Image (tube, rainbow, N blue to C red; front, side, top):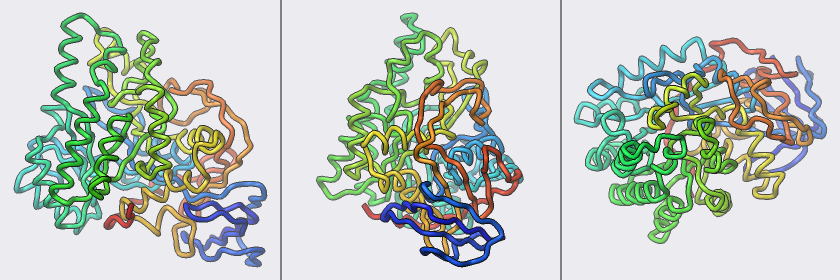
Length: 460
């Protein structure tokens, strides 16, 4: 199968030019003006933008949490991602405390194999670190192509490890060329505030937000950064939401320390006033919670200053009946919201069209930096000869509206219902195959491949 994309405006993290792309099989074969190759399929991209496929490094598909499971599995989740221009995701494997990392890996392989439509990889969440786990970490890096390890500074008794375990994990990961990622919030402070509010009968979704004030994230981000500095391990803070946490990373730059940071599309576009909608606010109950307008300003600034390298989604959807498990108690609302499908278009409308970021920065934060940080570049995250032909053909002028009636995620509400966007993912290619065209998905479950990863290649 060969594809010739004609006359597109090609945007990468570093360049902006009009050219043709010639694709043979899964790879980009040639790039140039007025290419004369004969192809099985010709796509006229005149007036359109051509990006590398989006990479969302923070999703939770078919994940057990709070007595239920996230409602998108590998089939529905990766299909929705493709509709929104995201050709690859990285999901989180959760180790069960007391069990092995390899058993957790087998569980997630069963969830994904034969079901994924888009490409995928895994982070391994380490929830029980000991000598045996340390050996498994090395095996995962060397033999499985899993090079990033998630840790939690909250959710005591289920996911959280203590600082001593964190430091020992960092030492092992550093020695063998991996990366430690973190959910950086102070779990003890949060648990105390949750208990206080529940005891006072303050049970609405607003108190989810008030139980996780900015200081809980700022303190944990600074502590994690200090542990990275001590161990000299590469590190990555997931879903950063606020100015205080960003300032913790900014202070680390004073000692020439480099820490990778991800924020998410919701923290750049939504704010905590949504929690005042009584129980409807449960739609936006996630951890960390939405913050204030001043935090949005800080995060956009952090992107342009190079302090934030990646925008993901933390896609973790639950249907409304699942959210209603916490109708009488905010602490029982499953945490998470649906976003995997809208990230690329939201970031174009709210970022590029509003003048907050450039087109090159857009590609950097939605694709290229994730590929580099997580050891997939130049196979993924760019438009170059020899790279996988993961391509988004994007209409920059098409107006459309986000709605539960038209989205493809397996959830019965939208967190952005009625939002007007300008800019639409029109045709999506995954490894040279047309995945999305005319609003339809042309790939079957099982087309998605697991992508083994190497060492971080991004320097900041």
